Every structure is written in structure tokens, then in C-alpha cells.
Image 1: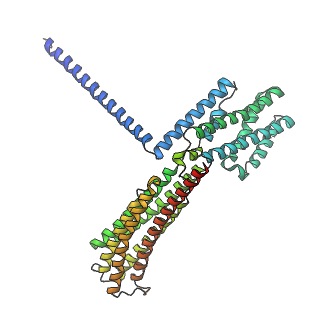
Image 2 (image 1 turned 120 degrees about the vertical axis):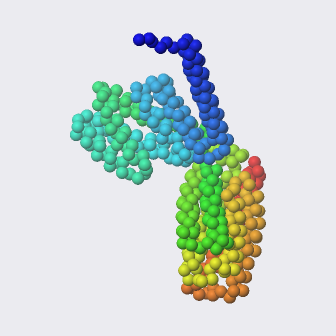
Image 3 (image 1 turned 180 degrees about the horizontal axis):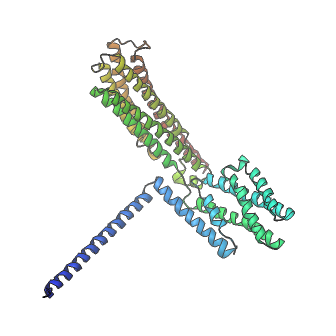
Length: 431
């Protein structure tokens, strides 16, 4: 049988095609890698350019890694401890979200470890190293660990006691045993000390921007709910599906309020014992009392909006003039004006409080004129506002309260700015 032989030129063409295909794949992979690195670089730059949760998280990770590394180096290379792992572990506990929390946790952790080691030292030197001694150490350490004064670090009392028992039994002489127990406490002191120094000296966390972001997110939810109800009233859409959407919006706003309150608490805690407050750029930050007032007023706005939605549902069930009621048309305009006022709070910024307050008062004036139209429509239609079985009275009352709360917000922001100005003047006179 004759064999079919490939022509040399065909083989060469296949080889050239393979080389071209491989080169194309390498080019595509290179372009993809370059694109990924560029996107990662832009994302990293954005993290450090804009304050927020992402930047705080990156800083916390970097500071934790630095504190752990320095603690390990100091314990291993400088002090030549045999078991240096306690030092970086302790350093991680001392690097926390706020300076106040770092100091408190470091003190509690150091106290818990010291107590645990002391329990083992007393029991070991007096009773020995038998199994019954371990039982005694465990019972005493666990009992002390129930003390609430140590907080979440109370579990470290028995943990440290067990580590100390292991170290105690591994040593053969009294001096070696005492040295190893003292080394555990020294490692904790080294780690907590390094962690505190790193957290306090390198960009100590100051979370007032997170508090502002929480309020801004809460305001966004309120604005969205106001606009949704206003659009529904304007379009005459009052189906149960629509009101369920409004109720869901109210629930989202409530969750945003919880998150904003937590952010305010964290921001307030970050001010305590924080040396960055002494810097000129941060001296205007005196606390979050006024922001709490703003949050409380916004929380009441959500409550009143939920009451308003219930009244609209009652109207749908009991009134037959629903779609053409001039009152609801005026009400939609009023709610849209309130949404514009709340929109100012979505840009809340400590550096621009006077500007935001002025804009909020201007928006409140527009909403006040819209409210007058609502009240005028109620008078012209002679609606039974005092009838508890009809929704008209609740609608009018809630409309008035909504505007009062936004005025209260403007007053709170204005008072915050005046307080800041007064404190800066006192500091200037003292200097």
C-alpha cells in the first residue's frame, strides 16, 4: 500500500499557524493582566483617596500586620524569648477600630493573662504538677473568668492558666519555671504595647466620616420613600402592591436607621483618647450630640411616613373619591418638596454644615408653601379632620409633623455649627 505523505510546505504552514495562535494567546493574556493591574491600581488609589469603610479596613489590616511583625521581631530577635508567639497574638488584640477600644481591650487582656498565670504559679509552686492540680487550676481560673469586669477577655484567664501549666510542667527547675511564667506575661506586655503604639501613632482611627456616611445612607432611604409615595399619589396608583412597596421602603429605612446609629456610636467612641483630635484639621470635631439629634428627627420622619402609609391604605379601603381627590394631588406635591429637602441631608458634610443648613432651610420654605396648599385643600373640601374613623385628620397631622422634624434638623445643624465656632474661638483665645 502506498503511504500518503504530507507535503513539507503544508507542515510548515501548520507550524506557522500554531506559532501565530500561541503568540495571539500570549498577547491576549498580557493585555488581560495589564488591564487587571490597572484596575487594581485604580481601586487601590480610590481606597486611599476617599475615606470610608474600605480604607479603614485596609489601614486596620496593614497596622495589624506591622504590629504583629514588630512584636515577633522584638520578642524573638531582641529579647530572645523561647516562645514568641504570644507577642504578635497580643498585638493583634491591641489594634482595634478605635483608640479607646484598643486601650480597654489591651488592659483587660493583660489583666486576664496575668491573673491566669498567677493562678498557675500559686498552685504549681504550692501543690505541684499532678492531674489534681490541673483540676484545681481549671476550677479557679474558670471561676475568676466569670468576672464581668474583664469583659470579652474573661476567657483568657483559663486559657493563660492552661498555657502556663504546660510551660510549668515542661521545666525541670524552680528558676526555669518562674522564668517561663514571667516570659508569658512579658510577651503579652510587649505585644499589647507595640499594638497600642502602632494604633495610636499611625493614623489612629477617627470614624466621623463613617458616622456621616451612615446618616447620608439613611437620608437616601427616606428620600426614596418620600418620592415613591409622592409619585404614587400623583399617578393615582394605590393598589395593594404599591402600598406594600412603600411598606418595604419603610422597613429599609428602619434598617438604615439602625446602621446609622451604630456608625454614630463608633464615631463617638473613636474620639475618646484619640490624639488626632488635637490636630488643627480635626479640632472642629467635638462630638456627635447634634448628629444624634438629626438621627432622632429622621427616625421620627420614618415613623410618621409609616403612619401616613397606613392612612393611605385606610383611604383606599373606605373612600370612593380616592383617585380624584384634590387633597392627594396637593399631598403628592408636598411629599416631593419634602424629598427635595431630605436630599440635602444625603450630602451631609461636617466641613459644609453652614451651606447644607442654608439649603435645607430654603427647601423647608418650599415645603411649607406646599403644606399650606394641602391645608387649604382640606378646608375647601370641608373634610372631616376630627373624625377618628376617617383618614383625613391623620394625613394632615402627619404632614405638619414631617415639616416640623425637618425644621428641627436644620436647627440642630445650625446649633452644631455655632457650637463649633464658639469652641474654636475659645481655643484661639486660650492660645
